[in-house]
Image 1 (spheres, rainbow, N blue to C red):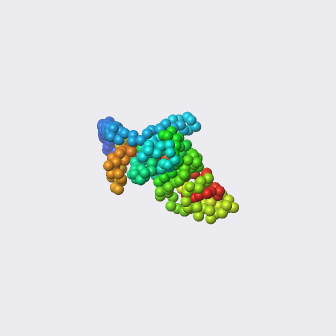
Image 2 (cartoon, rainbow, N blue to C red; image 1 turned 135 degrees about the vertical axis):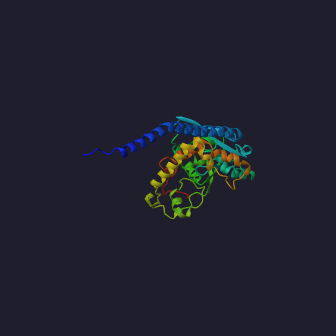
Image 3 (tube, rainbow, N blue to C red; image 1 turned 90 degrees about the vertical axis):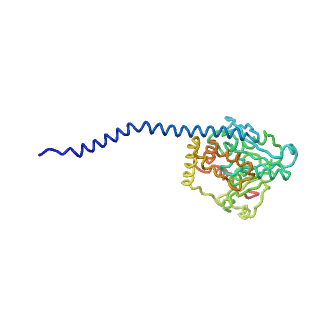
Length: 317
């Protein structure tokens, strides 16, 4: 039969032995270097957050609100301009609600401009954004607008309200009208909120005569059924992808990797508040707020508002 040839196997075995020896000696060093690297990132983020808190304290007031059926308490940030002079009288207060993922600093220039023209204006940070506490997770959009109403009442703001919603803030404004207290609202302004007419027709408000653009929805006719209203179809695949992206950024936010994404914000006004504005995107809670406001499974805010759509409407957003 002859003698079997063992040399190739011996060579292969020797190579594997060398590989495992190198792995055994190198792995502790690699693990140590990785641990030191991420440890340094955690320290850098902690020091940077402490510096941001020192440089940019809460500009408005943190108002305690009760939510989740009375189970939870947290504080919402309400930031007002020119309200003290009109407190308690009949002059309306402009209440500004920001786009998805944006803190109150993004609308401070608008609030200042409204106040400079003699009208009080307040911005409300939704849970986890700006200086507001995160509240409880996951949050029902209906509870969020009820919390906003509580914060305005406890601030206290007893004046009539004009809601100013930018982007998704316009959807929050519409849900506020349906769920919270529409009797306080005497007007609404929507900035870049749903330019698509079919979606505008779908997200129609009831019980209010304060808004414009009635023509398209009234053309349906009062005799038509709810089923005739155009419906919004949610792309669950896209929503899951976006949700995973927000989840990933939430996971890495404690190690400061997101700080490099915080750009220069060209055109931001007022320029002297740019540092304050950028600091709100460096907070770990900001990315957690984006993930939980999105809802994990898609746009829960839009779905909540759809429940209130009927053909018996006085206005169309």
